Image 1 (cartoon, rainbow, N blue to C red):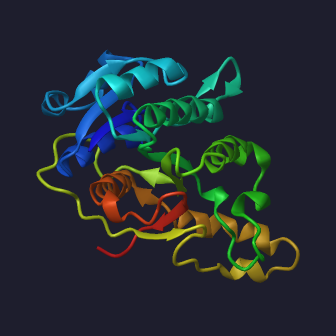
Image 2 (image 1 turned 180 degrees about the vertical axis):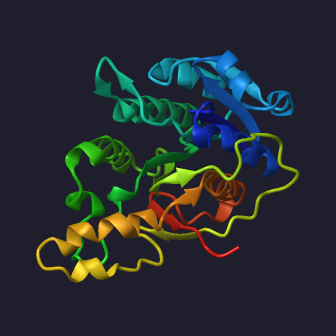
Image 3 (image 1 turned 90 degrees about the vertical axis):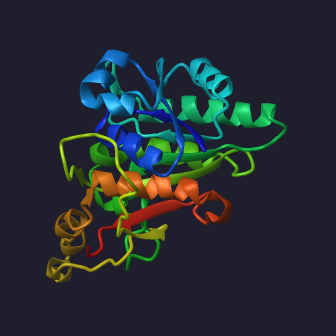
Length: 257
């Protein structure tokens, strides 16, 4: 696929570049600063991608990049971003998704494939009767992800074939960002709507507050490697013809190597 990658200078986005290339995708990196990207990744990676400068909040610029480079997929890995004191992840999601929807309609109603990044709080909290993890967390920790979730759920998959990947904490396996000789072969377990392989801590049995305290150790157990997450997304795009994750909120957990 020809993939427009936003957030390519971030922790996940920069690792998506070698992952996408290893899965034989063409990468068009949409960044605010070409020079910043140059300082983060190897020259070999730069030589194998197209770089477009622009702001993700400029929906017309995103649309132009999608059309000019004939992209059929988009990955938004933009991380936490604040402008004028306002958390704007929801606005970024709106800008990018609306551009992708317009391009799909211009192509005769052929929707693009899209991956967006959200928070684990959007997933259901097992054993609560349908409540979500974010319902048991402080609003300041989850509001920005709630906005992204609301944006995505409002888009019919006939207009955009989207998936919202709901992440917890992510850590690098290596600080070096360079070409991969082949796909990483991640061992992530994935599930739709609720976290896979959920195991409560003993603290959940504590009266009244246990259901809240339980989330601290359990969410920590969902820490993933940035490179594995990148491989998951890139691999899903490579297998898109049979992708059952369209229109879903997806959780993941590291498996055994």
